[in-house]
Image 1 (tube, rainbow, N blue to C red):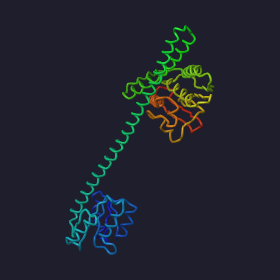
Image 2 (image 1 turned 90 degrees about the vertical axis):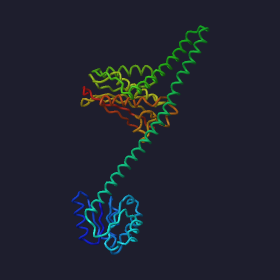
Image 3 (image 1 turned 135 degrees about the vertical axis):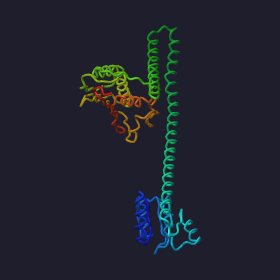
Image 4 (image 1 turned 30 degrees about the horizontal axis):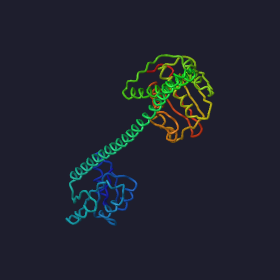
Amino acid sequence: MILIVDDTPDNLISLKKVLEKHGFEVDTASSGEEALKKVLIQEYVLIILDVQMPGMDGFEVAEALSGISKTKDTAIIFLSAANTDTKFITKGYSSGGLDYITKPADINIILLKVKTFYRIYEQSRKLNEMQEKLLEEIEIRKKAEHKKDEFISIASHELKTPLTSVKGYIQLVERSIDKGNPAILKKHIEKANQQLSKLNDLITDLLDISKMESGKMVFVKKYFDIAKLLENVIEVLQHNNPHYQFIVDISSKGLVYGDEMRIEQVLINFITNAIKYSPGQHKIEIKSFIENNKLHVSVKDFGIGISEDQLSKVFDKFYRVDETSVHFQGLGIGLYISSEIINRHNGEIGVRSKSGEGAEFYFIIPVLEND
């Protein structure tokens, strides 16, 4: 918007009409005091300022404007009929003006200058936007690089831990062979197998991340029995965690369209996380129902919970809750993979939780084919 400041009404009206005719949005002020009040409320790209005015003259107005932070990028053109000497023109520039036009002025010249200043303003605005976006992109990449470095460090540690354990158990097996004690041998082999399973899970997660990044993760969608899938997963995990009470409410019956293996992967991730992050607790609630042709599945634990400021981040890649990362193993990518799987099913994934009050993870996907 352009602000014209002039104590002569005819000058205001004529210049305003010309500028509006050429598509400019124009505001007016009949004194320097009124102009200062208006700039505190409205932002202007350009101020066309008469020099000779009662009260505050144009130079005083320009100097006052220079002290207002919001007008630091506002261009000022002085118009003067009386003060046409070089000393006044020089004062105009030193007061903050970008141009000084003496009257009588050719309206076409004024219009040309206004268009030029507007073009410069638009170019400057676009350059500033590009600079802001570039700085934002640089900051995002610095966060991404930090997360990447942190992930590599965590992954190296997490992969070394089961490898070291397997190596240790193999050494124990070697020492126990000569003693001929099958029970001890079996115990060491079982422990080694547990560590190998953990290592396999970590590698599977890493491969899934790689496939997602390259767009090569394949989904094989078909209709499958959701109740049977849920029952099978719960049965296996209940067997592996006999000290936990699984409170199950499965009212979803029938076929659901999707990748059965990937949906199973999400469910297993939810339940194993519920067990991991609820030390000292022995109860997990699992619910499933179909409503309005959508499958709803939730897993609720009664463990450490998640603080409100971290809820929006738990599905981010490589994110690990700070206070839990020291106490719980993992790469911080299981929930990210789960969210990608549910997104590929045109579904919704989320969590409800409060710190110290457990967490309820859930997903919702369409029952029918809608690809």
